Length: 335
Image 1 (cartoon, rainbow, N blue to C red):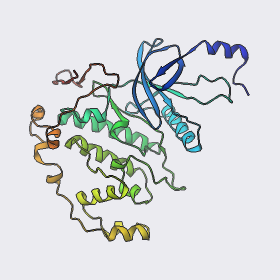
Image 2 (cartoon, rainbow, N blue to C red):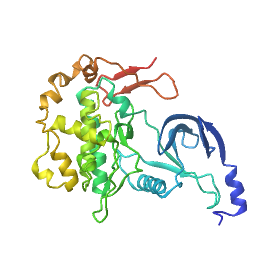
Image 3 (cartoon, rainbow, N blue to C red):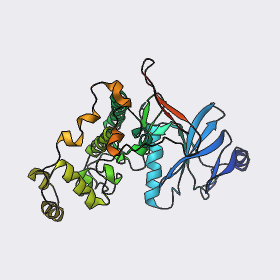
Image 4 (spheres, rainbow, N blue to C red):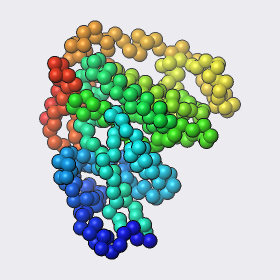
């Protein structure tokens, strides 16, 4: 069954053009020009573009084969629906959505147009952030999560690459392909959240609610302070081991909530007292004067490794995190 009549179909065809972006073909509205790839993942590929109608830079995400199976279709539907309905300054908003196909039989591509941000949190973590800016970023992260939870939505895949910032320190949460409502009448999918940020309830196959997002935020916060992943597990078993080695073996009350086979495994692991807060976050990471951030930084914990903040298109950029007129801006110059 056609979406539109022949005349309208012909008119719409003239509104699109096709361009190759790496190995991916983008067929998009002519209003979007100068496409440049900025990211990719299991859900699709993202390009920066210029909107000639609004005269603004935007990000265009082409969902990767959204209808190849039920799982992909659900993720595409969730992302589209939540981006359209959720309205909060710390949640990425949907500016436009379209498909170049003209009939239901042809329908296979979905493009989502969003605000273009300057970097993701993976890149920002490597910068010399003072604690004022770090606190402001975390505050915005929690504001966005609180808004989602108040609407009964669990993100379920919070990680630095799903959190983006602008040069004025504005932060937004994105990627809602795994998000779902916090109902209690169904089994929650156990394999959610990128491993490093996965809560114990998820790792051990327990029921979970909004608290899995709070655990992820805590992991991200620790990573921002230390400059490295808190629990870098190689698989789900090693992930659990990394957690208890640092935080200690859980209490018996926690053990009682586990399924018998899982409880047997957990109880037979060596008992760990856990690290003290001082060992996890030594004083060197908390300078008394925030102006010392140029001298004391989290990356010193990582053998003074330095990392560049670099766009995928290879262009030289300067990212300035400057959220007050009087504050000294943090600049990272890319050669």
